Amino acid sequence: MHRIFTFLLLLFTSTSLFALVSIAPVDIGSKRGLSGNVSGALSSKSGNTEKNDYSLGCRLQYDQGTDYLAWGIFTYDYGTSNGTKNEDKTYAHVRYIHAIDENKNWTGELFVQSERDNIKSINARSLTGAGLRWRFFNADEWGKGYIGMGGLFEKINYANPQINPNEDNGRLNSYLAYTKSFMSSSKLNYLGYFQPKFNDPSDYVSSQTMELIIPIFGTLNLSLTAKYSYDSHPPIGVVKEDRAYITSLLWVF
Image 1 (tube, rainbow, N blue to C red):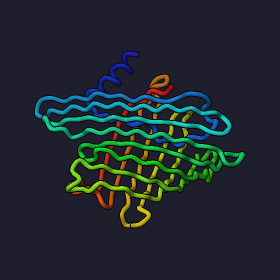
Image 2 (tube, rainbow, N blue to C red):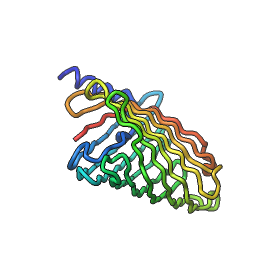
Image 3 (cartoon, helix red, strand yellow):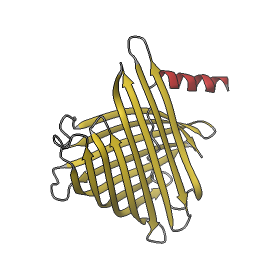
Image 4 (spheres, helix red, strand yellow):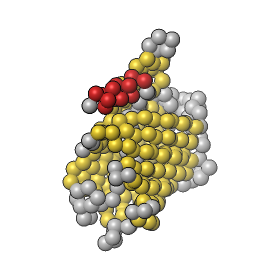
């Protein structure tokens, strides 16, 4: 027990943590009833570098078991470096999944999302969408693979609309997801999104996320994540690419 406590203490005091809930795709009936996970972190450095990071993430899911499931996530990240704010964002997403065929290889999806990112001058980005998901393989040896396709409509309000005019867009929403369990409780997950505008395919956003989840003790897990995001037409003053290498703790219930 002492080793576990020492490991967690070192992790929180020496590693910059960010709120991130698991990206693993879920199947109807895989975990009936109410479930979820929580991620929280506090990281602080002082001396030559003054840096503080505060993070919170949570996910709740209800699985009816035969026909549908619904899940929602919320994350909040805030950070400062040498007295300057370098992170301040919130993100919320709710999704409803309903079975179409008996084997549940085909499902329909409805979702809504809201986010805010002060560093990128986004006061609010709200969207709603719908689509289909196809589980194109499902094998114990190779894992599970999914393809999603649909559409979304977004509204973006910027902090300085004189510089970055507010937007109302329709986008194609496509994604590829993969999950593989191994060594009884560990899991490898991948999620990739591609979202071009309907009226201008050259204007698109994309993201690639790879995650490794390793159990630590009981229902406590370590999540190691690499994420790459790209916006072909970002707001003025914002770079096109974002990269993140994230270490977080997940408590699953």
